[in-house]
Structure formats: structure tokens, C-alpha cells
Amino acid sequence: MQHSSSYPKFAVVGHPNKGKSSIVSTLALDNTVQVGNTPGTTQVKRSFPLRVDNRVVYELFDTPGFQRARRVLAWLQEHEPSSADKRVDVVREFVALHRDDKRFRDEIELLEPIIDGAGIIYVVDASKPYGAEYEIEMEILRWTSQPSMAILNLIGRDDYRDEWSRALGQYFRLVRTFNPLKASFTEHMQLLESMAQLKEDWTYPIKDAISILERLYNQRVEESIDIIVSTMFDILSYVERKRLIGESASPKEIGEIKRRYREKIIKKEKSAERQIEQIWNHKGVEKISNMLDLDSIALFSKESASIFGLKQREVIMTGAGAGAVGGVGIDLALGGSSLFVGSLIGGLIGGVGAIVGFDNLYRVKVLGQKVGKRELTVGPMQNINFPYILLSRVLYYASEISKRSHASREAIELKNLESFASSIFDSKTRDKLEEVHSLLREEKDIPTELRDEYRETVRLIYIRLIED
Ligand SMILES: Nc1nc2c(ncn2[C@@H]2O[C@H](COP(=O)(O)OP(=O)(O)OP(=O)(O)O)[C@@H](O)[C@H]2O)c(=O)[nH]1
Ligand SMILES: [Mg+2]
Image (cartoon, rainbow, N blue to C red; front, side):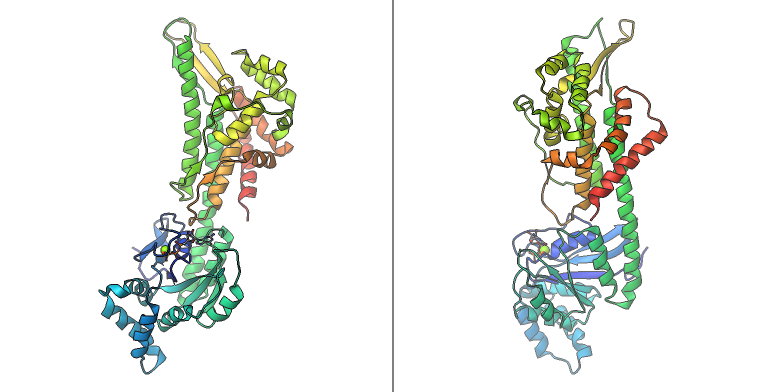
């Protein structure tokens, strides 16, 4: 058991609708905090301890905004003690006397954690002009004499930080700019560095929290890379099998196994997304990734063939090889347009399953000699572009999730990935990746060193994507 006072606590307070809950979300790495664009979203205080390995590193209190600050301050001033050191006792008395008074419910909720020892994080929207009405709230907080810091949040486009700072500096020990929706991991750590200065007793625990969070971050990065790499190997080498009843495979049996193969691949990609969400504690993120209507996708121009630096000939040749099973590849090669570049774009937008001609991109074989022991197999994927489609999608998703603020309630859109895809693979990278992709296409084993090398290549791309 951890002693309850051994970790720092902060109450996030301020006017309604200024981003208090958003800041709690971001600092607690927790997307279950209620955030909303109407004032009064948070009605009661709620504690959000940040736990790492079953240990609380710090605790945040989300609180409702001030409602009747003027009345509260009037009461406090009517009970003005003989010296400033006794003011906190008057605040305590106010809370004790008004616990059941509905009029002051919001003030009671927000003052309670503070008089119980929480530090103050006062949040303002510095994209709106400063006004003297805030001085009432700030004065009440000053009476509690708890260590305090003000956060300038820029919700809108304008910037009134100068005037805000001049006022806030008179009431709070520190004033910092922090945008809960855009803050990077580094900015989060910088804010903690500031919080560590608020009170001597907190310096060590907060420095400790910083190193714990840095370790957690690095661990999450490595776990994400493991998921990306294992998903690549898993999907690219996947073969769907079906025991055959008769001498040869019926069209129905072939149709059925192809459908199953395709469903499995889509499921594996989804599962990778879910695992990455879990690693970063971003469960339940909404995604916009429409499945495209396969028939409605037009073939694409020759220019897009260079998207992954693949030569037109390479693309067509692989297509012809894979399509030989169904005879589709040859038609395409003669037509001169590249189905596979078209499929690439379809896959980037719509999900790995939404690929034109997907049906003809994998091997369909009948294995075995004896009737009753024959097996129909589909896979592995033969399309040369496919691994890059998949890798772009998974890398994009993983990088968006790892950079995502826990205060964000927006959907992640898997769109416009063509330029993303073309920007992340240079020709050297592609050569390295291709070495493994081609072995997987041929159902060969991948030596450990080659797998490690592949992981390192993926790692470098991912790290570059999530750097500040
Ligand atoms: N663009 C932008 N929007 C923000 C930012 N911070 C908060 N918001 C939005 O502002 C609205 C209010 O945010 P909350 O975090 O719920 O604010 P609050 O202070 O907890 O509000 P109450 O609980 O109602 O007092 C939400 O729609 C947020 O998405 C920001 O830095 N940038
Ligand atoms: Mg709130």
C-alpha cells in the first residue's frame, strides 16, 4: 500500500468551459474524462490518479467551474481573520458550513480537494481578453494558501497572454502556457518540471514521476513497433486452408475460402489497431475509414505508379504472375494501366480489404495427392504494393495514436494517405523492406537477423513520425 500523501495531488480549477477537464485528461493520460463544449460539463469533482505499474505517480481532481464566486468571497471577507495565516481556516469553515447548501455546490466541490492538500492548477482561456471578474476566483484561491500555478490555454485564435500574465502573476506562483489538445510528450514533461517547483515536498516525487513517465513512453513506443512488425509478418505470410471433399475445388469452395482469407486479413489489421490503442490507453477511439465499393473504383493513372518507387514493369510483372491463376493479370498488362497502383490507393483509403482486384492477388492452390486429404489454400498475398499499403496504414495509425492527446474526442481519419505513404519510404528503405516482403511472398522463412533488421527499419520510420 502506498501512503496517500506520498504522491502529489492537484485540483484543476477555473471558470466553466475553459479546458479544465481537457487538461486533466492530458495530464492523467486518460481519455475517459468528460469533456464538452457547453459550460457545466463537469458537475462534481472526480479524481484521476495516474497509475503506472500499480503505483500512483500523481493524482488530479477534475472540478466544476466557479458559479458563485462573488458570494463566496463576500462570506470569506465578512469572516476576515486577524492575520493572513488564518485565512485558510476561514475557507475550511466555509466548506464545512455549506456542505449541504446547493447554491455553493460547485464551489464546495472545487475547494474540498484544495483544503485537503491538493495544489492548484488554475486554467484560463488566454485567447479571450482578461477581465477583472476573474480576480474574485483568484482571490478565493489565494485564501487557501496552497501552492498554485496558472495555465494559459489558447482555445481560440487570439492571444491575450500578455495581459493575462500580468494579472495572474500577482496571484499564482507560476504561469505557464499549455495546450491540452496539442501538447507533445515533451511539453507534458516540461509542465511537470514546473509543477515540481511549486512545493519543496513535491520536487522529488514529481521528478520521479517524470522518469517513470519517460520510461513508460519508451516502453509504449517499443511495444507499438513489436505490434506493427508482427502484424506485417502475420498478414503477409498468412495462408488460409480448407480440407477438400472432392477431387478438385468447386467454384463455391474457392469463393468461400477467398472470402475467409480476406476477412482474416482485415481482422488482423483491426486487431493491430486495437492493440496499439490499448498500449497508449486510447481505447474506443472513433475511426473514419470507409470501406470502398470495390466496383466503383476507377483505375488510376501511370504517374501514381511511382508512389512507392516501384517501376511500372515490376508492378505489372508481379500482377501478371499473381493473376495467372485467374488470368486477370495478363489482360491488365496488355491494357497498360496498373491495377495494382489503383488497388494501392483503394487500400490506403478504405481498409486493406477494399482493394480493386483483391480477388486475384493471392495464390490459390490445391495441395495433396489423395482424395480426402486434399487441401485448398489461399495466400500468401502476391501483390508487390500490398505490404506498403499495409505498413503505411498501420504506421499512420500507430503514430496518430501515440501523438494523440487524451483530451481529444475527435475521430482519426485514415485518409489522404497517398502522400503520407510516398513520404515515408525512400528507395533505400524500400530495398530493405522489399528483401523481407519478397521472401514472405515466396513462403520462405525469415532469418532472425533479417527480422531484426526489418524491425529496425520500421522503428526508424515510426520514431521519425512521432518526434516533436
Ligand atoms: N481547440 C481547442 N479546444 C479546446 C482546448 N481546450 C479545451 N478545448 C475545448 O473546449 C471545450 C471545453 O473543454 P473542457 O475541458 O470540457 O472544459 P471545462 O473547463 O472542463 O468545462 P466545464 O466542465 O464545463 O467547466 C471542449 O469542447 C474542448 O474540446 C484547446 O486547447 N484547444
Ligand atoms: Mg470540465
